[in-house]
Length: 247
Ligand SMILES: [Zn+2]
Image 1 (cartoon, rainbow, N blue to C red):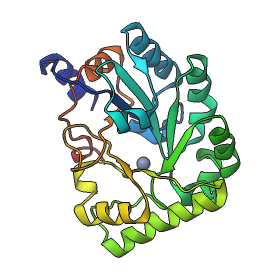
Image 2: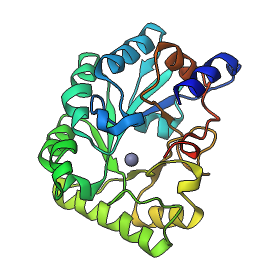
Image 3: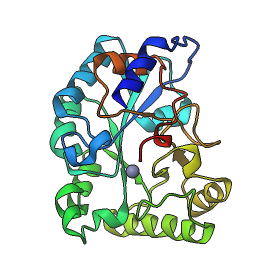
Image 4: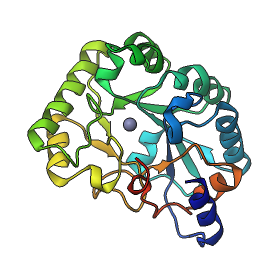
Protein backbone atom coordinates (compact mmCIF):
# COMPACT_ATOMS: atom_id res chain seq x y z
CA UNK A 1 0.00 0.00 0.00
CA UNK A 2 2.88 2.37 0.76
CA UNK A 3 4.26 1.97 -2.76
CA UNK A 4 0.91 2.66 -4.34
CA UNK A 5 0.24 5.76 -2.27
CA UNK A 6 3.77 7.03 -2.87
CA UNK A 7 3.36 6.61 -6.62
CA UNK A 8 0.08 8.47 -6.57
CA UNK A 9 1.70 11.33 -4.66
CA UNK A 10 4.02 11.71 -7.64
CA UNK A 11 1.81 11.15 -10.65
CA UNK A 12 -1.58 12.50 -9.65
CA UNK A 13 -2.00 16.10 -10.71
CA UNK A 14 -3.26 18.11 -7.76
CA UNK A 15 -6.72 19.38 -8.32
CA UNK A 16 -7.05 22.97 -7.25
CA UNK A 17 -10.75 23.24 -7.83
CA UNK A 18 -11.78 21.81 -4.47
CA UNK A 19 -14.01 24.28 -2.72
CA UNK A 20 -15.05 22.40 0.37
CA UNK A 21 -13.36 21.34 3.58
CA UNK A 22 -11.91 17.91 4.20
CA UNK A 23 -12.73 15.52 7.03
CA UNK A 24 -9.89 13.17 7.91
CA UNK A 25 -10.79 9.64 9.00
CA UNK A 26 -8.42 8.02 11.48
CA UNK A 27 -8.79 4.83 13.54
CA UNK A 28 -6.14 4.08 16.18
CA UNK A 29 -3.12 6.19 17.09
CA UNK A 30 -0.54 3.80 18.54
CA UNK A 31 -2.26 0.39 18.49
CA UNK A 32 -0.16 -1.49 15.91
CA UNK A 33 -2.52 -4.49 15.94
CA UNK A 34 -4.82 -2.41 13.74
CA UNK A 35 -2.30 -2.55 10.90
CA UNK A 36 -3.06 -0.21 8.01
CA UNK A 37 -5.53 1.67 10.21
CA UNK A 38 -2.96 2.58 12.86
CA UNK A 39 -1.08 5.88 12.76
CA UNK A 40 1.86 6.14 15.18
CA UNK A 41 1.45 8.92 17.77
CA UNK A 42 4.54 10.86 16.63
CA UNK A 43 3.30 10.76 13.06
CA UNK A 44 -0.17 11.83 14.10
CA UNK A 45 1.31 14.85 15.89
CA UNK A 46 3.41 15.63 12.83
CA UNK A 47 0.34 15.49 10.56
CA UNK A 48 -1.62 17.88 12.73
CA UNK A 49 1.31 20.29 12.93
CA UNK A 50 2.04 19.98 9.23
CA UNK A 51 -1.56 20.88 8.39
CA UNK A 52 -1.41 23.89 10.71
CA UNK A 53 1.92 24.97 9.15
CA UNK A 54 0.30 24.76 5.73
CA UNK A 55 -2.40 27.17 6.86
CA UNK A 56 -5.28 24.75 7.36
CA UNK A 57 -7.88 25.58 9.98
CA UNK A 58 -9.37 22.77 12.06
CA UNK A 59 -13.13 22.80 12.54
CA UNK A 60 -15.63 20.23 13.80
CA UNK A 61 -16.54 17.48 11.32
CA UNK A 62 -20.20 18.38 11.82
CA UNK A 63 -19.46 21.89 10.55
CA UNK A 64 -18.04 20.59 7.28
CA UNK A 65 -20.92 18.09 7.05
CA UNK A 66 -23.41 20.90 7.50
CA UNK A 67 -21.89 23.73 5.48
CA UNK A 68 -19.32 22.04 3.25
CA UNK A 69 -16.64 24.22 4.83
CA UNK A 70 -13.99 26.21 2.99
CA UNK A 71 -11.00 24.90 0.99
CA UNK A 72 -8.62 25.38 3.94
CA UNK A 73 -10.94 23.79 6.51
CA UNK A 74 -9.95 20.41 7.91
CA UNK A 75 -11.62 18.18 10.49
CA UNK A 76 -10.54 15.12 12.46
CA UNK A 77 -12.65 12.01 13.06
CA UNK A 78 -11.97 8.54 14.43
CA UNK A 79 -13.82 5.32 13.65
CA UNK A 80 -14.19 2.34 16.04
CA UNK A 81 -13.68 4.31 19.33
CA UNK A 82 -10.30 2.72 20.11
CA UNK A 83 -8.48 3.45 23.38
CA UNK A 84 -5.55 5.30 21.80
CA UNK A 85 -7.90 8.06 20.65
CA UNK A 86 -8.18 9.09 24.29
CA UNK A 87 -4.67 8.18 25.47
CA UNK A 88 -2.65 9.39 22.46
CA UNK A 89 -4.63 11.58 20.07
CA UNK A 90 -6.75 13.53 22.53
CA UNK A 91 -3.82 15.23 24.32
CA UNK A 92 -2.33 16.33 20.99
CA UNK A 93 -5.65 17.67 19.70
CA UNK A 94 -6.39 19.35 23.00
CA UNK A 95 -3.01 21.11 22.89
CA UNK A 96 -4.13 22.76 19.65
CA UNK A 97 -7.80 23.19 20.66
CA UNK A 98 -8.91 20.97 17.79
CA UNK A 99 -12.44 19.53 18.00
CA UNK A 100 -13.03 15.98 16.81
CA UNK A 101 -15.64 13.26 16.40
CA UNK A 102 -15.58 9.59 17.37
CA UNK A 103 -17.80 6.92 15.81
CA UNK A 104 -18.65 4.14 18.24
CA UNK A 105 -19.29 0.47 17.47
CA UNK A 106 -21.81 0.08 20.29
CA UNK A 107 -21.37 -3.65 20.98
CA UNK A 108 -17.57 -3.26 21.00
CA UNK A 109 -17.84 -0.51 23.62
CA UNK A 110 -19.92 -2.91 25.75
CA UNK A 111 -16.52 -4.63 26.20
CA UNK A 112 -17.90 -8.15 26.46
CA UNK A 113 -14.86 -9.73 24.81
CA UNK A 114 -11.32 -9.63 26.21
CA UNK A 115 -9.81 -7.76 23.25
CA UNK A 116 -12.48 -5.08 23.59
CA UNK A 117 -11.63 -4.49 27.26
CA UNK A 118 -8.15 -3.28 26.31
CA UNK A 119 -8.49 -2.04 22.73
CA UNK A 120 -11.85 -0.25 22.76
CA UNK A 121 -13.11 2.70 24.78
CA UNK A 122 -15.84 1.84 27.28
CA UNK A 123 -18.88 3.92 28.11
CA UNK A 124 -17.36 5.63 31.15
CA UNK A 125 -14.55 7.01 29.05
CA UNK A 126 -16.88 7.93 26.21
CA UNK A 127 -19.18 9.73 28.61
CA UNK A 128 -16.28 11.78 29.88
CA UNK A 129 -15.18 12.59 26.34
CA UNK A 130 -18.70 13.70 25.40
CA UNK A 131 -18.75 15.93 28.47
CA UNK A 132 -15.45 17.42 27.28
CA UNK A 133 -17.01 18.32 23.94
CA UNK A 134 -16.10 15.36 21.72
CA UNK A 135 -18.89 14.64 19.25
CA UNK A 136 -19.92 10.98 19.36
CA UNK A 137 -21.75 9.20 16.59
CA UNK A 138 -22.64 5.63 15.68
CA UNK A 139 -20.47 3.26 13.67
CA UNK A 140 -23.11 0.49 13.85
CA UNK A 141 -23.65 -2.17 16.53
CA UNK A 142 -21.23 -4.89 15.36
CA UNK A 143 -19.34 -3.39 12.38
CA UNK A 144 -21.07 -5.36 9.64
CA UNK A 145 -20.49 -4.71 5.96
CA UNK A 146 -23.79 -3.14 4.95
CA UNK A 147 -23.13 -4.03 1.33
CA UNK A 148 -23.39 -7.70 2.35
CA UNK A 149 -26.38 -7.84 4.70
CA UNK A 150 -30.09 -7.51 4.00
CA UNK A 151 -32.08 -4.47 4.99
CA UNK A 152 -33.74 -6.14 8.01
CA UNK A 153 -30.37 -6.99 9.50
CA UNK A 154 -29.16 -3.48 8.64
CA UNK A 155 -32.13 -1.99 10.46
CA UNK A 156 -31.31 -4.04 13.56
CA UNK A 157 -27.76 -2.70 13.48
CA UNK A 158 -28.95 0.90 13.22
CA UNK A 159 -31.54 0.57 15.98
CA UNK A 160 -29.44 -1.44 18.44
CA UNK A 161 -26.54 0.96 18.11
CA UNK A 162 -28.72 4.03 18.53
CA UNK A 163 -30.64 2.72 21.56
CA UNK A 164 -27.48 1.40 23.25
CA UNK A 165 -25.76 4.76 22.89
CA UNK A 166 -28.87 6.49 24.19
CA UNK A 167 -29.10 4.17 27.20
CA UNK A 168 -25.40 4.43 28.00
CA UNK A 169 -24.77 8.11 27.28
CA UNK A 170 -28.16 9.78 27.45
CA UNK A 171 -28.48 10.99 23.87
CA UNK A 172 -29.41 9.40 20.57
CA UNK A 173 -26.73 10.03 17.94
CA UNK A 174 -27.69 11.67 14.66
CA UNK A 175 -24.42 10.97 12.90
CA UNK A 176 -23.47 7.58 11.47
CA UNK A 177 -20.17 6.51 9.93
CA UNK A 178 -20.44 3.58 7.51
CA UNK A 179 -18.24 0.59 8.51
CA UNK A 180 -15.46 0.18 5.89
CA UNK A 181 -17.05 3.26 4.31
CA UNK A 182 -16.60 2.66 0.58
CA UNK A 183 -19.30 2.60 -2.07
CA UNK A 184 -19.53 -1.22 -2.00
CA UNK A 185 -20.19 -1.19 1.76
CA UNK A 186 -23.50 0.64 1.45
CA UNK A 187 -26.63 0.74 -0.68
CA UNK A 188 -29.83 2.66 -1.19
CA UNK A 189 -31.91 0.39 1.11
CA UNK A 190 -29.41 0.73 3.95
CA UNK A 191 -29.28 4.48 3.43
CA UNK A 192 -33.07 4.81 3.68
CA UNK A 193 -33.22 2.53 6.73
CA UNK A 194 -30.47 4.49 8.52
CA UNK A 195 -32.24 7.79 7.91
CA UNK A 196 -35.60 6.33 9.03
CA UNK A 197 -33.99 5.28 12.33
CA UNK A 198 -32.78 8.85 12.88
CA UNK A 199 -29.30 9.17 11.41
CA UNK A 200 -29.49 12.41 9.49
CA UNK A 201 -25.77 12.71 8.71
CA UNK A 202 -24.04 9.71 7.16
CA UNK A 203 -20.28 9.72 6.70
CA UNK A 204 -18.38 7.65 4.16
CA UNK A 205 -14.70 6.75 4.29
CA UNK A 206 -13.96 7.94 0.78
CA UNK A 207 -14.10 11.12 -1.24
CA UNK A 208 -15.11 10.72 -4.88
CA UNK A 209 -15.79 6.99 -4.58
CA UNK A 210 -18.26 7.35 -1.71
CA UNK A 211 -21.86 6.13 -1.78
CA UNK A 212 -24.30 8.75 -3.10
CA UNK A 213 -25.78 11.09 -0.51
CA UNK A 214 -23.04 10.53 2.07
CA UNK A 215 -20.51 12.98 3.54
CA UNK A 216 -16.99 12.39 2.18
CA UNK A 217 -14.04 11.67 4.43
CA UNK A 218 -10.38 11.07 3.63
CA UNK A 219 -8.88 7.86 5.02
CA UNK A 220 -5.47 8.36 6.67
CA UNK A 221 -3.42 5.14 6.65
CA UNK A 222 -0.43 3.73 8.52
CA UNK A 223 1.75 4.47 5.49
CA UNK A 224 1.13 8.18 5.22
CA UNK A 225 4.44 9.95 5.72
CA UNK A 226 4.82 13.73 5.32
CA UNK A 227 4.93 13.57 1.55
CA UNK A 228 1.88 11.34 1.22
CA UNK A 229 -0.01 13.33 3.82
CA UNK A 230 0.64 16.62 2.02
CA UNK A 231 -0.42 15.09 -1.29
CA UNK A 232 -3.54 13.75 0.41
CA UNK A 233 -4.49 17.22 1.65
CA UNK A 234 -4.29 18.38 -1.95
CA UNK A 235 -6.53 15.58 -3.18
CA UNK A 236 -4.09 13.02 -4.58
CA UNK A 237 -6.13 10.10 -3.18
CA UNK A 238 -9.62 11.44 -3.65
CA UNK A 239 -10.40 8.91 -6.37
CA UNK A 240 -8.75 6.04 -4.58
CA UNK A 241 -10.95 3.11 -3.55
CA UNK A 242 -8.95 1.89 -0.56
CA UNK A 243 -10.58 -1.37 0.39
CA UNK A 244 -10.65 -2.92 -3.06
CA UNK A 245 -7.13 -4.19 -2.58
CA UNK A 246 -6.63 -4.43 1.12
CA UNK A 247 -8.90 -6.37 3.46
ZN1 LIG B 1 -14.66 0.92 11.41
